[in-house]
Length: 477
Image 1 (cartoon, rainbow, N blue to C red):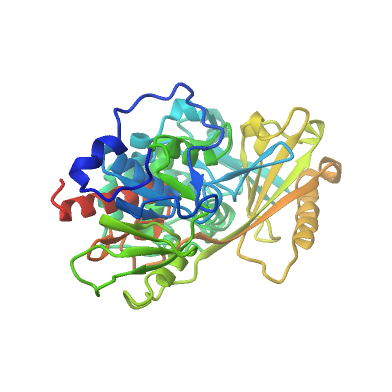
Image 2 (spheres, rainbow, N blue to C red):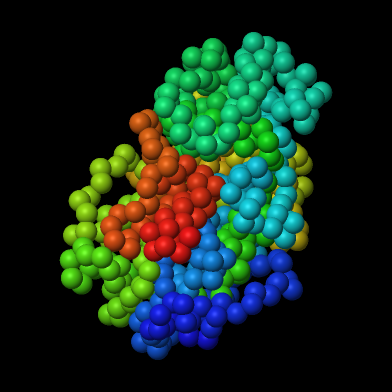
């Protein structure tokens, strides 16, 4: 099957998209339906319907939307695999997600695109354990763990009034639609919203900062209240989970739905060019290996925000953006009999000291994350810590964990790998526009979580929206 074609779209749709067949195996361990441009970089035709640059969630969502509309496309990915930030590496038999990530089952766009059963989602405890005052205190969802919640009413993580305010906040976001939340005009920072609601300093510092700080990679909670409301609503409606075979299975499942040979890995784009100025024709795409690809309908740029200005150099002026959110995720191996708890719970640092923000025993959530007879520990820090080495950070983490669980419980920990993720999320401090128009110019569109909400769902939505705008402008919908 050819990668692209030089014939009119209407005459070639059937050869690009034969009648779709279901996949016999729904458990996609790794996506293997792509080919690499480095193997034979010029054995391809130079034109297709749509070119998508970047095979992260946004690019994969755009590709799935084009597939459903039977529009030919080519998805270009600079790295050796799909998923972008949503990838899982296998190291010594351990499944290592690239950074701390949790999949919330109530994400509305994800529910339309993903087969949850095939992902074999493993659930976290609906709540958290907060380290404060030298010991752990439980914060539980009263609708899922009623008696745990009752027992925690008098703990020092927050007052009884605080816990009542959480219930009121839940009710407030549940009566709103996602659209109402994401387009609200009265946005403030998350911390200002929480203070306005009336939460005490105790629960802000001991629960909200580590919990939502770990979601937004923003412990100061300067992220827009729109994003807080959206995530809080999803948490109320769904469950926190991980796919049994790693967070990257989400990306793999989306990629497995695409036509054969529609994805090119190891294919870096050097520039996007309008050959005759910014006229009515879509731009061409120049590859680093010298090849040039042309799109009959348009080009969708679905790379991370810092890369967009590089590709659009000469097409538009650089956009001033806020510093991105950064994180570091450290993985440790352990002996199962040394794990101090067996619950699939998230541990939060409510002590306002140390470098750990949150951690969990990954194999308590998904046994499949480690080989038999081994356990896996995931620890997350917020920020880049550029002045600290990986070894230094690992040693400091072990020292802190020994204070949490006791020295005997961390003696068997061995540092496995550290991920430094400079661009973990776009910075979405107010003011924000979470429904940006994807159109940049004639036949050129943007897609990514920085265009919508900085969530899994936002990335998926942005891919769909870019395709919808493209097809609408071409009169195809």
